[in-house]
Length: 246
Ligand SMILES: NC(=O)c1ccc[n+]([C@@H]2O[C@H](COP(=O)([O-])OP(=O)(O)OC[C@H]3O[C@@H](n4cnc5c(N)ncnc54)[C@H](OP(=O)(O)O)[C@@H]3O)[C@@H](O)[C@H]2O)c1
Image (cartoon, rainbow, N blue to C red; front, side, top):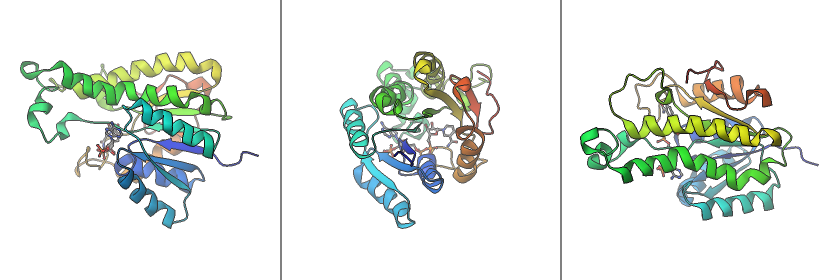
Protein backbone atom coordinates (compact mmCIF):
# COMPACT_ATOMS: atom_id res chain seq x y z
CA UNK A 1 0.00 0.00 0.00
CA UNK A 2 1.32 3.46 -0.90
CA UNK A 3 1.43 5.63 2.21
CA UNK A 4 4.40 7.97 1.96
CA UNK A 5 4.46 10.77 -0.55
CA UNK A 6 7.62 11.13 -2.60
CA UNK A 7 9.14 14.50 -3.55
CA UNK A 8 11.97 15.37 -5.92
CA UNK A 9 13.91 18.62 -5.45
CA UNK A 10 16.50 19.85 -7.96
CA UNK A 11 19.52 22.01 -7.13
CA UNK A 12 19.02 21.05 -3.50
CA UNK A 13 22.31 20.90 -1.60
CA UNK A 14 21.97 24.52 -0.40
CA UNK A 15 19.71 27.56 -0.47
CA UNK A 16 16.00 27.23 -1.13
CA UNK A 17 16.38 23.69 -2.48
CA UNK A 18 17.91 22.39 0.74
CA UNK A 19 15.19 24.07 2.80
CA UNK A 20 12.54 22.45 0.58
CA UNK A 21 14.07 19.05 1.33
CA UNK A 22 14.22 19.75 5.05
CA UNK A 23 10.64 20.93 5.37
CA UNK A 24 9.15 18.29 3.05
CA UNK A 25 10.95 15.56 5.01
CA UNK A 26 9.59 17.04 8.25
CA UNK A 27 6.13 16.98 6.69
CA UNK A 28 6.53 13.25 6.09
CA UNK A 29 7.64 13.10 2.47
CA UNK A 30 10.32 10.76 1.26
CA UNK A 31 12.66 13.21 -0.49
CA UNK A 32 15.02 12.73 -3.42
CA UNK A 33 17.63 15.47 -2.95
CA UNK A 34 19.52 16.18 -6.15
CA UNK A 35 22.56 18.30 -6.94
CA UNK A 36 25.07 18.41 -9.77
CA UNK A 37 27.71 17.00 -7.42
CA UNK A 38 27.06 13.61 -5.81
CA UNK A 39 29.32 14.61 -2.92
CA UNK A 40 27.35 17.80 -2.25
CA UNK A 41 24.05 15.90 -2.52
CA UNK A 42 25.30 13.16 -0.19
CA UNK A 43 26.62 15.62 2.38
CA UNK A 44 23.39 17.63 2.37
CA UNK A 45 21.25 14.50 2.63
CA UNK A 46 23.39 13.27 5.54
CA UNK A 47 22.50 16.38 7.55
CA UNK A 48 18.80 15.61 7.16
CA UNK A 49 19.21 11.83 7.57
CA UNK A 50 20.94 12.50 10.92
CA UNK A 51 17.70 14.11 12.07
CA UNK A 52 15.78 11.00 11.03
CA UNK A 53 14.55 12.20 7.64
CA UNK A 54 14.00 9.89 4.67
CA UNK A 55 16.23 11.72 2.18
CA UNK A 56 17.95 10.11 -0.80
CA UNK A 57 20.81 11.91 -2.61
CA UNK A 58 21.19 11.67 -6.37
CA UNK A 59 23.54 13.44 -8.79
CA UNK A 60 21.65 15.36 -11.46
CA UNK A 61 22.60 18.17 -13.78
CA UNK A 62 19.13 19.22 -14.92
CA UNK A 63 20.36 19.98 -18.45
CA UNK A 64 21.63 16.40 -18.90
CA UNK A 65 18.87 14.11 -20.14
CA UNK A 66 20.79 10.91 -19.40
CA UNK A 67 21.01 12.06 -15.76
CA UNK A 68 17.25 12.67 -15.79
CA UNK A 69 16.57 9.25 -17.33
CA UNK A 70 18.76 7.58 -14.67
CA UNK A 71 16.99 9.57 -11.96
CA UNK A 72 13.56 8.45 -13.17
CA UNK A 73 14.74 4.83 -13.27
CA UNK A 74 16.05 5.16 -9.71
CA UNK A 75 12.78 6.65 -8.41
CA UNK A 76 10.75 4.01 -10.26
CA UNK A 77 12.80 1.18 -8.75
CA UNK A 78 12.85 2.58 -5.20
CA UNK A 79 9.47 4.25 -4.83
CA UNK A 80 7.31 3.56 -7.91
CA UNK A 81 5.69 7.00 -7.81
CA UNK A 82 6.36 10.71 -7.56
CA UNK A 83 3.94 13.11 -5.87
CA UNK A 84 5.78 16.43 -5.98
CA UNK A 85 8.51 17.92 -8.15
CA UNK A 86 10.17 21.13 -6.98
CA UNK A 87 11.95 22.48 -10.06
CA UNK A 88 14.28 24.67 -8.01
CA UNK A 89 17.65 24.52 -9.81
CA UNK A 90 18.45 27.82 -11.45
CA UNK A 91 21.16 30.29 -12.33
CA UNK A 92 21.36 34.05 -12.20
CA UNK A 93 24.23 35.33 -14.36
CA UNK A 94 24.80 38.18 -11.88
CA UNK A 95 26.52 35.48 -9.78
CA UNK A 96 28.92 34.34 -12.52
CA UNK A 97 32.57 34.61 -11.52
CA UNK A 98 33.32 35.31 -15.19
CA UNK A 99 32.07 38.90 -15.55
CA UNK A 100 32.38 38.86 -19.34
CA UNK A 101 30.04 35.87 -19.40
CA UNK A 102 27.70 37.75 -17.07
CA UNK A 103 27.74 40.81 -19.32
CA UNK A 104 26.89 38.57 -22.28
CA UNK A 105 23.38 38.18 -20.81
CA UNK A 106 23.07 41.65 -19.26
CA UNK A 107 23.77 44.42 -21.75
CA UNK A 108 22.90 44.74 -25.43
CA UNK A 109 26.42 45.78 -26.38
CA UNK A 110 27.85 42.54 -24.94
CA UNK A 111 24.95 40.18 -25.68
CA UNK A 112 25.90 36.68 -26.91
CA UNK A 113 23.44 34.05 -28.03
CA UNK A 114 25.29 31.10 -26.50
CA UNK A 115 25.37 32.75 -23.06
CA UNK A 116 21.65 33.53 -23.31
CA UNK A 117 20.84 29.99 -24.47
CA UNK A 118 22.77 28.49 -21.55
CA UNK A 119 20.57 30.39 -19.07
CA UNK A 120 17.40 29.46 -20.98
CA UNK A 121 18.46 25.80 -20.98
CA UNK A 122 18.83 25.69 -17.19
CA UNK A 123 16.04 28.04 -16.07
CA UNK A 124 13.34 27.54 -18.71
CA UNK A 125 13.74 24.24 -20.55
CA UNK A 126 15.25 21.92 -17.93
CA UNK A 127 12.18 22.10 -15.65
CA UNK A 128 10.15 20.63 -18.53
CA UNK A 129 12.79 17.99 -19.22
CA UNK A 130 12.54 16.90 -15.57
CA UNK A 131 8.80 16.44 -16.03
CA UNK A 132 9.28 14.72 -19.40
CA UNK A 133 11.34 12.00 -17.74
CA UNK A 134 9.24 11.76 -14.55
CA UNK A 135 5.81 11.93 -16.19
CA UNK A 136 4.97 8.24 -15.74
CA UNK A 137 5.98 8.46 -12.06
CA UNK A 138 3.70 11.46 -11.57
CA UNK A 139 0.86 9.48 -13.16
CA UNK A 140 1.16 6.99 -10.28
CA UNK A 141 0.32 9.69 -7.72
CA UNK A 142 -3.18 10.51 -6.45
CA UNK A 143 -2.40 14.23 -6.50
CA UNK A 144 0.73 15.00 -8.52
CA UNK A 145 2.15 18.52 -8.36
CA UNK A 146 4.93 20.18 -10.36
CA UNK A 147 6.08 23.43 -8.73
CA UNK A 148 8.53 25.51 -10.73
CA UNK A 149 10.46 28.22 -8.91
CA UNK A 150 10.00 31.39 -10.95
CA UNK A 151 10.74 34.95 -9.79
CA UNK A 152 9.18 38.39 -9.54
CA UNK A 153 11.74 39.27 -12.22
CA UNK A 154 9.76 37.09 -14.65
CA UNK A 155 6.81 39.44 -14.63
CA UNK A 156 6.34 41.53 -17.80
CA UNK A 157 3.91 43.91 -16.10
CA UNK A 158 6.32 44.61 -13.22
CA UNK A 159 9.45 44.92 -15.35
CA UNK A 160 11.34 48.19 -14.89
CA UNK A 161 14.79 46.63 -15.21
CA UNK A 162 17.21 47.77 -17.89
CA UNK A 163 18.88 44.78 -19.50
CA UNK A 164 19.43 41.64 -17.34
CA UNK A 165 18.03 39.71 -20.32
CA UNK A 166 19.17 36.22 -19.40
CA UNK A 167 17.55 35.88 -16.01
CA UNK A 168 14.36 37.91 -16.58
CA UNK A 169 13.79 36.38 -20.01
CA UNK A 170 14.42 32.82 -18.85
CA UNK A 171 12.06 33.05 -15.89
CA UNK A 172 9.42 34.70 -18.08
CA UNK A 173 9.74 31.88 -20.62
CA UNK A 174 9.36 29.42 -17.75
CA UNK A 175 6.02 31.06 -16.94
CA UNK A 176 4.77 30.58 -20.51
CA UNK A 177 6.11 27.06 -20.85
CA UNK A 178 4.46 26.06 -17.60
CA UNK A 179 1.05 27.20 -18.85
CA UNK A 180 1.52 25.11 -22.00
CA UNK A 181 2.69 22.12 -19.94
CA UNK A 182 -0.26 22.52 -17.57
CA UNK A 183 -2.60 22.47 -20.57
CA UNK A 184 -0.93 19.32 -21.92
CA UNK A 185 -0.98 17.47 -18.58
CA UNK A 186 -4.37 18.58 -17.24
CA UNK A 187 -6.08 15.41 -18.47
CA UNK A 188 -3.53 13.35 -16.51
CA UNK A 189 -4.44 15.18 -13.29
CA UNK A 190 -0.97 16.74 -12.97
CA UNK A 191 -1.03 20.20 -11.36
CA UNK A 192 1.69 22.46 -12.83
CA UNK A 193 2.29 25.80 -11.14
CA UNK A 194 4.92 28.52 -10.95
CA UNK A 195 5.82 30.34 -7.75
CA UNK A 196 7.76 33.49 -6.91
CA UNK A 197 9.54 32.57 -3.65
CA UNK A 198 10.10 36.23 -2.69
CA UNK A 199 13.49 37.82 -2.13
CA UNK A 200 15.28 35.17 -0.11
CA UNK A 201 18.57 35.03 1.82
CA UNK A 202 20.61 32.59 -0.27
CA UNK A 203 23.82 32.81 -2.27
CA UNK A 204 21.66 34.13 -5.13
CA UNK A 205 19.44 36.43 -3.06
CA UNK A 206 22.24 37.81 -0.87
CA UNK A 207 22.15 38.54 2.85
CA UNK A 208 20.08 41.73 2.51
CA UNK A 209 17.10 39.78 1.21
CA UNK A 210 13.79 40.09 3.05
CA UNK A 211 13.04 36.45 3.75
CA UNK A 212 14.90 33.54 5.28
CA UNK A 213 14.75 30.28 3.35
CA UNK A 214 12.70 28.89 6.23
CA UNK A 215 10.06 31.65 5.98
CA UNK A 216 9.84 31.41 2.18
CA UNK A 217 9.49 27.63 2.03
CA UNK A 218 7.11 27.48 5.01
CA UNK A 219 4.88 29.97 3.21
CA UNK A 220 5.04 28.08 -0.11
CA UNK A 221 4.15 24.77 1.55
CA UNK A 222 1.39 26.23 3.73
CA UNK A 223 -0.19 28.55 1.17
CA UNK A 224 0.38 26.63 -2.04
CA UNK A 225 1.57 22.99 -1.92
CA UNK A 226 -1.00 22.00 0.68
CA UNK A 227 -3.85 23.84 -1.05
CA UNK A 228 -3.57 23.61 -4.82
CA UNK A 229 -5.99 21.51 -6.84
CA UNK A 230 -6.26 20.74 -10.54
CA UNK A 231 -8.32 23.94 -10.84
CA UNK A 232 -5.08 25.87 -10.13
CA UNK A 233 -2.97 24.28 -12.84
CA UNK A 234 -1.12 26.84 -14.98
CA UNK A 235 -1.30 29.58 -12.33
CA UNK A 236 1.58 31.79 -11.17
CA UNK A 237 1.58 32.37 -7.42
CA UNK A 238 3.33 34.69 -5.01
CA UNK A 239 4.78 32.73 -2.08
CA UNK A 240 1.91 33.95 0.11
CA UNK A 241 -0.59 32.10 -2.09
CA UNK A 242 -1.97 35.17 -3.91
CA UNK A 243 -1.90 35.26 -7.70
CA UNK A 244 1.21 36.89 -9.16
CA UNK A 245 0.90 39.40 -12.00
CA UNK A 246 2.14 38.08 -15.34
N1 LIG B 1 17.02 33.81 -3.58
C1 LIG B 1 16.11 34.60 -4.16
O1 LIG B 1 15.87 35.74 -3.72
C2 LIG B 1 15.33 34.10 -5.34
C3 LIG B 1 14.30 34.91 -5.84
C4 LIG B 1 13.54 34.45 -6.92
C5 LIG B 1 13.80 33.20 -7.46
N2 LIG B 1 14.81 32.43 -6.97
C6 LIG B 1 15.02 31.11 -7.57
O2 LIG B 1 15.10 30.14 -6.55
C7 LIG B 1 15.81 29.00 -7.02
C8 LIG B 1 16.85 28.60 -5.98
O3 LIG B 1 17.81 29.62 -5.88
P1 LIG B 1 18.56 30.02 -4.51
O4 LIG B 1 18.17 31.39 -4.18
O5 LIG B 1 18.40 28.94 -3.52
O6 LIG B 1 20.08 30.12 -5.04
P2 LIG B 1 21.33 29.15 -4.94
O7 LIG B 1 21.67 28.90 -3.52
O8 LIG B 1 22.34 29.76 -5.84
O9 LIG B 1 20.81 27.76 -5.54
C9 LIG B 1 20.73 27.50 -6.91
C10 LIG B 1 20.92 26.02 -7.07
O10 LIG B 1 20.70 25.63 -8.43
C11 LIG B 1 21.72 24.71 -8.77
N3 LIG B 1 21.92 24.59 -10.20
C12 LIG B 1 22.29 25.52 -11.08
N4 LIG B 1 22.41 24.99 -12.30
C13 LIG B 1 22.11 23.68 -12.18
C14 LIG B 1 22.07 22.59 -13.07
N5 LIG B 1 22.35 22.73 -14.39
N6 LIG B 1 21.72 21.36 -12.61
C15 LIG B 1 21.43 21.20 -11.30
N7 LIG B 1 21.47 22.17 -10.39
C16 LIG B 1 21.82 23.41 -10.84
C17 LIG B 1 22.96 25.24 -8.05
O11 LIG B 1 23.96 24.25 -7.98
P3 LIG B 1 25.52 24.60 -8.27
O12 LIG B 1 26.05 25.18 -6.99
O13 LIG B 1 26.10 23.26 -8.63
O14 LIG B 1 25.55 25.57 -9.41
C18 LIG B 1 22.34 25.57 -6.70
O15 LIG B 1 22.27 24.43 -5.88
C19 LIG B 1 16.42 29.40 -8.37
O16 LIG B 1 15.61 28.88 -9.42
C20 LIG B 1 16.32 30.93 -8.35
O17 LIG B 1 16.26 31.48 -9.64
C21 LIG B 1 15.59 32.84 -5.93
